[in-house]
Image (cartoon, rainbow, N blue to C red; front, side, top):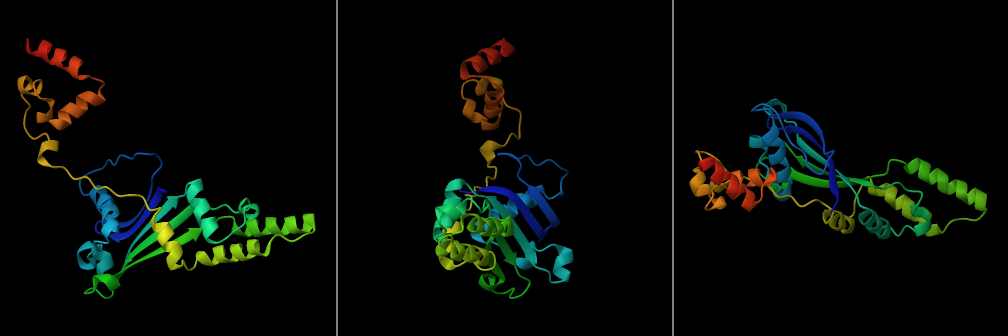
Length: 237
């Protein structure tokens, strides 16, 4: 699966416009209540099942102006995924070295129109980013001049199709691209994962699972079960 490089959100609930970069393998959101942290996580989760409701989810100001909700994922491709796209367009191995293709976009648009028909109101679209396309074509033409012999016709045709893919992605390619989209797991707390009351350490040392958050805190701090037992006993003595 591709890695999420960034997400652009327009007009979702409290978020009027947000361009969020995922710089690491994990990211921590810190901010005041009502700052939009939960909305960022919720909108990512809703993209999984297209579970949007325009009147409920649209930013209030945008709703009054009938503006669309827009969510755009920029995904970083792995070499294996890039290879699949090249193969789909039948671009020869010799031409591939001239093309910088490592990002794709998936856009979700929740329209202000057709509010009563969820299927019509929500649309998705893939687009392929080719940042150095003009340079790529230039390099290929230069190689043709230097070698004084043309590259395979399939190379140029493949490049032309790849250019067109930025404008329109075929159904067959879209199915391939959908397999690249990261798996979304949205975790919400349940009672056993929340510390709401004081923990009785004498009970906790007998069964660490009575408070999973506390157990995990100790484990993250480097405690083993044995060292945790001994330290709790020392505190209680």
